[in-house]
Amino acid sequence: MKFLALITLSLVITCFALPAIDELGFEEVDKEQVRTKREIARDINSLNDHQTAQAVCTALNTEGGWTFAVKRSCGSQYADCDAVCALQSVHDQDAQTADRTWSCINSLHVYDLKEPFTGNTYKLAYKVYRYNSCGGGCGPNFCCCRAI
Image 1 (cartoon, rainbow, N blue to C red):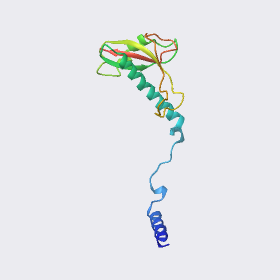
Image 2 (image 1 turned 90 degrees about the vertical axis):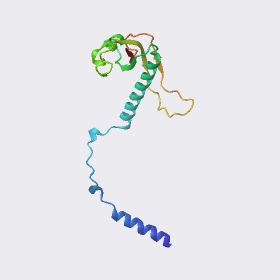
Image 3 (image 1 turned 180 degrees about the vertical axis):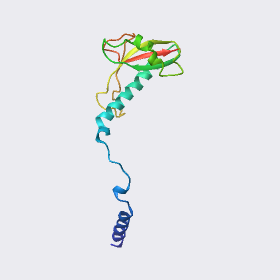
Image 4 (image 1 turned 30 degrees about the vertical axis):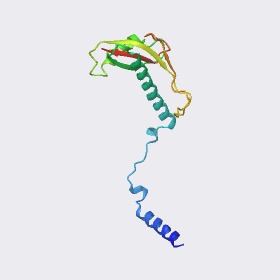
């Protein structure tokens, strides 16, 4: 009984010692700046598919040099991967390779995960299709570019 009274007393003292919530200096949150779990998951998935593309492109670069996975939009109205890899605006994003010779070495389609990857064994991760070309159209969503 004394033990229970002691715990209760320490909780009461702790509660009075804590500052009120309005004294903590929290600012009101702008609801338009709050991201949903779905938006965060989409951004993480986008980052992960870019990392996957970078790894695949690097593995495909058998001749050396710098390798970049460059995201491209799907559709025949968008530049093919030969053109994407030749864009000066792409080159200028990396000062070390901006003045080098760039070329396309391949193109990929990295598919979104059908369900979150938990890292458990016997679960599929990202599916990647390699085109063995540097074309365009609605297929490749990443171009593998090399700078030498």
